[in-house]
Amino acid sequence: MEYLNLIYCWAIDHGVELLGTISGLIYLYLEIKERIWLWPVGIATSALYVAVFYTSKFYADMALNIYYVLISIYGWYQWMFGGDSSKKENAPLRIKRTPIQFWFWITTSFVVFFILLWWILDNYTDSPVPLGDAFTTALSIVATWMLARKYIEHWWLWVVINAVSLGLYVWKGLYPTSILFFFYTIMAVVGYFKWRTKMLNVGEKGN
Image (cartoon, rainbow, N blue to C red; front, side, top):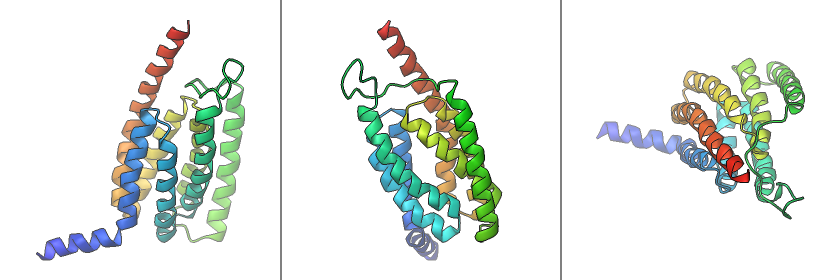
């Protein structure tokens, strides 16, 4: 009975984190299936994790989830209307490879965000892991933008982000979130191959 009480108390204390974990798994499923409802679910998940990361002093991750709310609105619109309007007005986006010329700007953006966030976290917050927090946050910023544009290579960035984040959350004792990011790491690989199959099938039909 005492053991059950401990579980109950833990669940109450970590209720927001548990809800975020559940909605995060739903978000991941919708992303892999390329369902547009991933964006409103993502908004809800991010709002929950703003509170989780504020309490845990992962300030860059907290700011990142505020960014997620905003980029989710952008992504929602892009997935509905951001396609090739020359062929069809307000056409939905299709999965595609990242244009080579974009990689310079993506890499530059990551480096700038990483250095800036690392400096802020190291000098102006009590973050216990400013380097790791800045790295995952900066890479997540560019990866989420790539997702909003349906660039397939965003999945490989998430493999790196999720694996590093998993280690950080285990160290911090955020075990439900750690479970979520364990699945995120594995399913990011699955997501890439699912999207790749869809992209190739659409390409064949287009020919």
